[in-house]
Length: 111
Image (cartoon, rainbow, N blue to C red; front, side, top):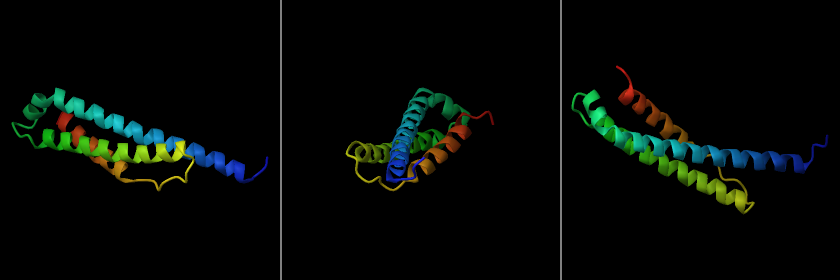
């Protein structure tokens, strides 16, 4: 098997499409959290003994996660379609979804 520039180009294209899909999947999960927060708003407030901080935090973090992930996904999609050099990996969507999941687990958790 040849270890030429074509092999590296294929790996980079695979990496680019994989990161594009991953960023858009994170954005989709953020939308799911937004809808769940909206749909279960009264439940979240009841779980927090009348406090709205968890529900508001989850809604805001979900929106922020969506914005960061959609922006990064769009940058990768644009680079892949135009065959430009791939942008740097953006870690903010990963951090944002981690915090969103943490707050969601606390908000929807049993304790």
